[in-house]
Image (cartoon, rainbow, N blue to C red; front, side, top):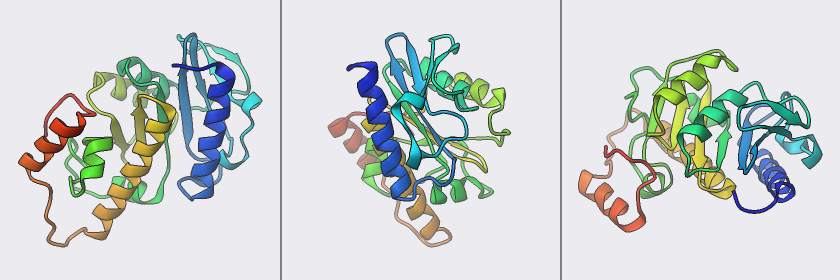
Length: 218
């Protein structure tokens, strides 16, 4: 991760407050992490995105040892699993955003491709999303399930819980999380309607033009 730790802390606070102000998360829900050269930062437990302070952010070593700051989010192992299996990504955003969370509650979703390819922007930012089963928030089972994916997905939807998205930079991860919420909103608004998804050829064209955020084709 480029830049200093202080810069990473300030950037994390700025993005968190922006997400909160725009309603992507409420109360003390959600968490964000950023990779450092000697570990990673993660938002503290029971903290509000709208009232974060740089000095309060938790710092963990590469092995997950708490180094400084407040106690880390109970989801810190989930972030570590995502960072460990996605070595080219440097930030993870987990939200309880309304539409992605609502979508995660629906029965009958394709667990390997749970958000339909209705717009090019979701393909460009996320590619496709994996639906994981419900696990209790903070459970070690979430980290184990993410590790088992071996980094195959940029975005994951936790059933009855919400999205987890990563990116090469903090900005990339936030933008991908926002795009996943927008794609989920479109999917919910068009649920049970006759929709026109992007074709395999159109998806291949997007991948050829903009690159692919995921290693596997649909």
